[in-house]
Image (cartoon, rainbow, N blue to C red; front, side, top):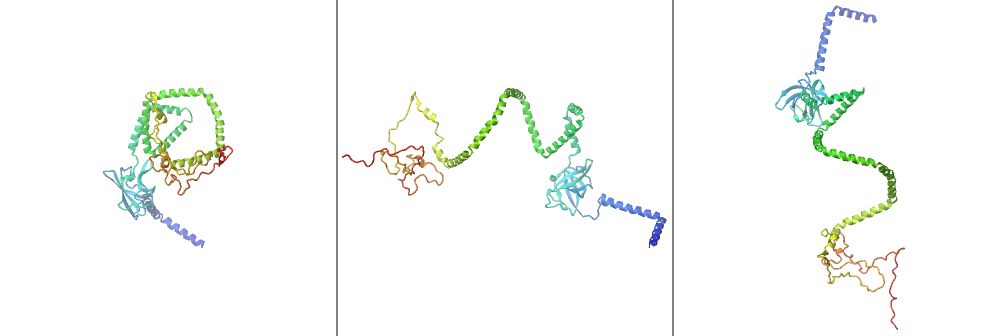
Amino acid sequence: MIDVVSRFIVRVVTAGYRRRTWLSGVALVLTLVVASGYLLLGALRVNPTASTYRVTIHLPDSGGLLVDHDVSVRGVAVGRIAALHITAAGVDAIADIADDIKIPASSQVRVSGLSAAGEQYIDFQPTSDRGPYLSAGSVVDQRNTATPVPLSTVLADANGVLAQTDPNQLQLIRRELSMTAAGPGKLRDIIDGGTFLLSTLDSVLPQTVSLLKNTRIVLGTVSALNTGLAATSRNVGRTLTGVTEMDGGYRRLLERTPALLSSIDTLFSDNSETMVSLLGNLVSTSQLLYLRVPALNALFPNYRGSTLDAVGTAFHDHGLWSTLDIYPRYTCDYGTPRRVPSAADYPEPFLYTYCRDDDPEVLIRGAKNAPRPAGDDTAGPPPGADLGQTTDPTPKGRFTIPTPYGGPTLPIEPPH
């Protein structure tokens, strides 16, 4: 078996050697076909069987785009630029996109570059994956597109920056940085920090522009007030000099303050329960006062003057003037049982002492006619109340003053 295989291999090699010229030509042709296919399908991405749809993109300028440049979605190639047309409003880019790629119509379109050397391409940046999607004949409005800053604009802006730079200051910076071996590292840190600052300010560009405009106004105002600032600095200097002279007093203040604060802390700790009760009572008092704000406004009207003004009106024309009213005043009937005024006892007061006169012009017991909260029925006794009922006896304590009966023993026997 091995002898048969060996003889076959020898015959094949011998036949190939005799026809080596033809075999070399066939190999070269196959290499050319494979290489051309790789260039067309792999490198140039020419696929005659591919199905695409065409989209028109309105751009303010070409941004360096050329025909056959890529079209991508977030950096992934999905098509190519078929043509570029100059219009009155800018440039129209005609893009052929693969049929199986769905791109939301609301996507932002940006002309980007693969490197600093160029190689621009159109990149779609969808904000969501929801439709409607681009289709054949769709148009992307110029408001949703952005192109890189042209090199001419960059050079013009750089020229403006360089024109504002003082060569003497740059020379001074170079000399300072070259004084030590760490100078290049410091320069690198300065450049890195400046780059980070500029990238941060670029994300808030409108606020940065507004800040620069406001800063110009502030600095102009400061420049106009230069004399006043100099006087302020001198006054501040004198103040700080005085503070320095009182250094010992401040030190004593700082030494004694902890003990004082500790005493205050102890005071609050010892009276915490009392303070909580007091605050609770103040809350209740505030609620009651809030419900009776109309009555308090009626009790203290704002049309009255101060007490001093009232006293001052009695002094005029070189004398003290007063008014005496000799007419009897209206008295109120409370409807309670009458007691003998000469009784020598100390009875408890009546519980329900309400004036029964409803005429507000008489102003008897004016609190009865004061404004009250909604649902308040305390302007009169409860329905069916006993007008002869007295209050509960006053509780007797250690400091209660005795009030015994001070009259004769009743009944008094008549003289014999």
